[in-house]
Amino acid sequence: MSKSRRKVVLITGASSGIGLACAELLGAQGHAVHGTSRHPAKDGAHHRMRVLDVTDDAAVRRVVEGVLAEEGRIDVVVNSAGFVLAGAVEDVSVEEAWRQMDTNFFGVLRMCKAVLPVMRAQRSGLIINISSMGGAAGLPFQGLYSASKFALEGLTESLRQEVAAFGIEATLLQPGDVRTRVREYRVRAGRSGPGSAYHEVFEKVLALVEAGEGEGVPPEQVARKVLMLVEGQRVDVRYSVGHLSQRVALLSKRLLPARTFEHIVMAVHGLSRR
Image (cartoon, rainbow, N blue to C red; front, side, top):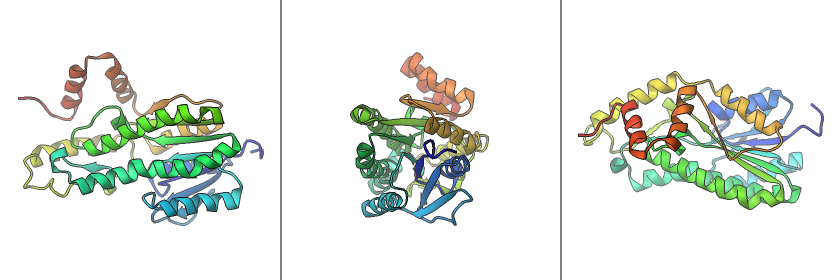
């Protein structure tokens, strides 16, 4: 790849799943990729790994400064770090909700605030925020996860408008089910056990969710979309990635009456009204 086309890319949550797939693909295509993780493995064949907890303001600044010291610029940030908190809204403690938001939303905000001065000085840059189809439609028993992604959607829409005059782009990716290790890393609300009024239905819904994740698209499919955006010219507000059925379902939210769409989501998750 020519030096003029080579991009310096910083990816959070790059030790597994979507973040790792992005790091491997972009690095193999000749881009200078720096991945981050709280517990990073060794460097990949084509990308570096750095230690980062996105809930730590100082750590975020250090990583950005380290990449700048080595590369002299940052062209692309892919905000992929995050986790899923599962449980009924009533069962989620405020402390658990805060941890969900601190990683999935404020972690992205910290990274954006750290790299935007760099991108403004360059008069160029691209921020890709990994959202979710759960950021467009509330998911039962993943309410705080959906809330974090809904917040990310609004932040990104606003950010796009503010930075456009500086030659900076920001966009959202909304993956549906993806075959990652999300099941291993999913956090259950502390009060979601047998003592919860929702316990039985929660377990049934979670089993359906995890079965769907097992049949999801490979993370490399999301990475290919990221590569297209990195090597393209202009980007749209958001892109959905995943099985066609899920992408069509997402589109149907804009077309169907709200209660009808809600009924469909509930039916998919095995829920019904009295």
